[in-house]
Length: 275
Image (cartoon, rainbow, N blue to C red):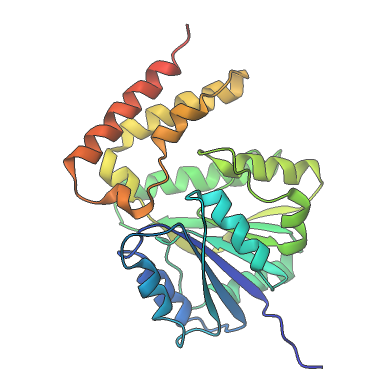
């Protein structure tokens, strides 16, 4: 009987990502391992995102473009997973980049580790002492934490078996920030195996840091993490302002949007201040 299912289903949530999507799709078109399908789940983009996506249909083994009625990264990921045919799903952000041997390397790690969830190390998209230091600290922190009790996950690229994903129940569609937390914590509760791998790596976009500055974002994130550690309630409405569902639109060069974002950061910091 002929095999009909690919080994990987690659789910890419998009929203106004015309500037970045072609880079990731070009990387996928150049993969040495070809047993995969691509599922792009678009949140009704108003730019050329879907046109660019469809232009790669003949360059990759199989590509489909779905439309999500709701602009929410978790909703879009879950919709893509629902349509996935492969035993392994890779969720990857549209602004990420991967080397030609990436899928081949991930398949090797799956077979070697036996893990049901895999999170690779990442590298910054722009090489600098600051960016490389940030990446090194985050990678090391997540690896050390994963050997004790994983509570965090880099959502930008996650490899998970389809069976494990359905056991977890998918991504929590009620949260707008750090959705990987609830995902990996549920996985731990269920006894699913999780592994951080150092190779192959992927390239993570630091565009948010470049756009709004390290200190502003780090300050807001630090306070939300402190709230989590102390058991204080995190204001989801505030976090929705910090991470608005605007996709690539958030990074267009408009002073108005930047000023609005900065004001939202200030509001969040105030809301998270102890009363």
